[in-house]
Image (tube, rainbow, N blue to C red; front, side):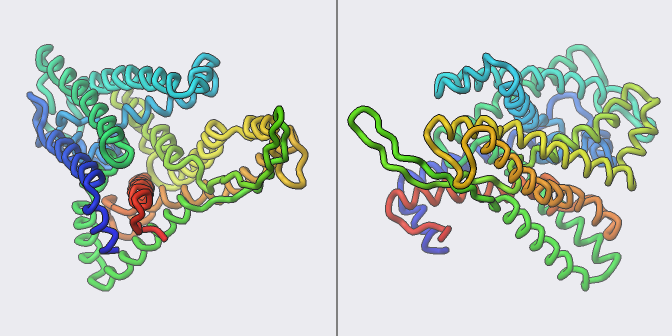
Length: 422
C-alpha cells in the first residue's frame, strides 16, 4: 500500500492532477465557509438543527454550507437533480435520444441543456429559500433574513452564482484533475461533516450506555461499509457469445464475453428520490399549515419505515429500467450477431435479461432500504440522528472512493506501476 502511494507521487502528470484536484476542493471548502450578506446565522443554525426538516436533509449534501447560507449553500443537489431529470427525459423524448446516439457532439448538447436546467433549478431553490427563511416560525424566535428587496435579490444572485461556479469547479476536476468532479464535490461535502457527526454519536452513546458501546458502534460501521462495498461491486454476469461473421472478404472470429448486471444498478438515486418524496409534504407545510400534521405523521414511526421502504424499492426498479432497457440490449445483441447461450435472440433474450434483472433487483433494493433506514433505526437506540455511516451518505462516499481508486489504478498500470487493487 505504501509503495502504491509512493508510485502516485513519482509520476509527475498524476502528481499534478492530484494537486489540482486538491486545490479546487480547497476553494470549494472556503466557499462553504463564506456566508451570504444579510443572514442571521444563529437563527439559521436553529432552523437547520430541527429534526425531520427539509433544511437538515439539504444541509447534509452541502457540507454544512446551507447552515451558513454560504456562497455554495445550494450544494451540488441542483446539478444532480438536473442530471437525473435529463436521464429520465432521454428515455421519453426522441430528440434527446437522437442526441445521445450522436456520440460526443450529442453529449455536449445534453450537457449544455443540463447546465441551463441546473441554473433554473438553483434560481427556483434560492428564491424559495429566501422566501421561507424570511418568514417567522412557530418555535424559533427571530428571522433568518430581515427581508428587503435589495437583500433578497443579493442573496439569490449570490447563491445562483455560487452554483454556476460549483459546476465549473466540477468540470475542471473532470477535465484536468483525477476522478469525476461532481462526485468528488459531494464526496467532500459529506466527508467534512462526518467527524462532527461521529463526535456527537460517540458522546451521546457513551453517556447513555458507557464506553462498552464503542466496540459495538465500530462493528456496525465496519459492517455497513463492507455491505455497501459488496452492494456496489456485486454483479451477475450473463454470458454472451459472438458468432463468426463474413464481411466482404474478411471473416470476423467469434468470441465470448458477458453482460455485467449490478446488484444495485440504480446506485444512490432511489434513496434521493424517496427522501425527496417523503420530505415534500414537510416543505409544503411551510406554505400550507394544514399539511403539518400529515407531514409529521409521514416522517415518524412505522408509517415512515413502511412508506420509505416501498418508495426505495419502487424507485430502484423504476430507475434500473430507465438506465438499462432489456429490450434495447437484446436488439443490440441481435444486431451485432451475439446471443446468450441457450436463449433465442430477440424477445426471448429480452425476457431472460428482464427476469434476471428482477431477481437481483429485489435483494439489491431491500439492502438499499436497510442502509437508508439505518440512521433512523439507530436513533431509537442512541438518541441522536447524527449517524455518519448510514443512508445516502455512506453509499456516496464508498462509491466515489472506489471509483477514484480505480481511476488512479488505471493511471498507474498504464505506466507499468503496481496499484492498490490486486
